[in-house]
View 1 (tube, rainbow, N blue to C red):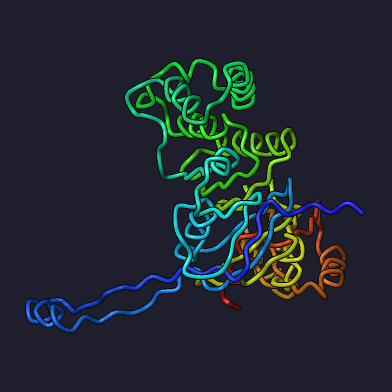
View 2: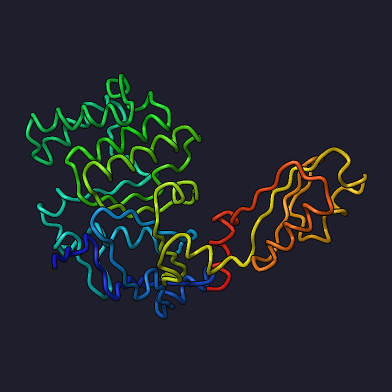
Length: 332
């Protein structure tokens, strides 16, 4: 039997910061010179998980949950306070050259491209830094240009690019060395819907083409739904959930959403009041209503709606992922 080692494996990883505190005012400032107050903040608190080769995992949590801190430890930018990590057989914080040539970190709110020169010149700099052979570099750049639709963008100074155009160039520059593990921290933040879709399509294509593993953080649930079968939810530095996206919905959402398209006059002028006996009315406009009902009652409510009202169309949906994640945080 052939077994494959995970691309990412961490056990009991921790990152603890010591924060010094004092009250406002000159007296408090003088007092703190001799008696400093400090407290420990556990940014990452004893977490363990692994990511298999070729797997795309959503790493979710609110701001301050510990997502970016974890990614920085896994790329070697931070030393942990405790625990172990293995990425492609390397200890990340040793920062060996062989390790750095096999991973990449894309931070949606940080720049790696030089602002005043064309992206192509920054790409050439990356080629030299990573010692990429000339033929391989040209081949990879051509592939990335096609997949991301870069075209003439790479010849423009970075300062002249829109946010979406710059983000595509940032991702291309981070992947010129064909990394086997991608750490993507909010890669679509601030982008319009079209640019977000293009980035998602590219990540999926790169994953299929090179079998790369991806650990993705995002506040856009469309990113997660499009790319990830598995999600890890972290809050206050601890893992609240690790499993299939569908299992997350089943575990933490006891409701279904029913969208009803009504025929004219179906409510006899009563509007939303005519629908309240069937479930919680989330929204109502003339001709359409959105209801929230308990999962166990979905079939019964659907039958009653079709029997008692003139319905043109009816769909049953799982709740938005945002609601499910919020429920995880509340229960956590």
